Length: 367
Image (cartoon, rainbow, N blue to C red):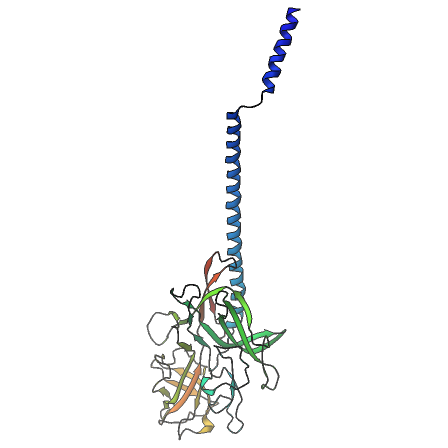
């Protein structure tokens, strides 16, 4: 009987010990462990989410830049080499297939490309003869005291696709800063809309341009220059703000002459520091035209270069005709293209998290 009572007491002690729960210390330890574990998980989650968001933003920036560069490279690589780039109406009384200052001309206004292209006609003094880079910059809208943003522009003639058809067009790439906090890299085009050559149109028709890349805060455009007539090292050159680089040799004040053998040389160029026709080669064309007699209107035409001497003197042929001789002064124009253009873009992602600098060199195949 006594044994049975002892057994029951033992079971009671075990049940009582099991029913008393956990102590306060044990509870605090458990809570502390839970807090540490939860914090660790939260830290890992937040870090992973930040890395994902940052990576997503980076991918977005590079994707947008790649899409823009693909368009630029496709059109710029086949740019047209010319010294009559803007559209013009050849005067039928003195037709020569080249722009003259008395003729109507049409082209994009690089500062206001949305303006109607043919109302009114472009001022002949603003005619653009060849591919041109315009150095430009603008003030930061958030912090005006900081260094200005680079916003170069490039204007050239090339082939582009308009509504499924290939068109010869004037093309302008520039940053639209009309919304300073949301700058956009845009493309503007002006093309002949009919076979007569007189109809002109933009795409889109309202002249608002095509968005190539959002949040492009800076665009620096450099051209590759190598003067084959000197020993200087070649390299990329930037166009300073407020200046322009037109890829055309010109002398518009009778700055050229030919000797008794028809060898052409210059007395000066319109552009300061021009390199004596160093960017031309045999088979390129030079337009020679009237400065006073004895240079005759019938000879105002393109001449094909046979050779270029180290001092920049040119010899020509024109369908077997000798080059007329004039020491009184000859006007001239000769367009050329650089071998490469380097673009440097600074782009902010749409969340405003990062600024990325992206560079691409576009080689011009058509030169």
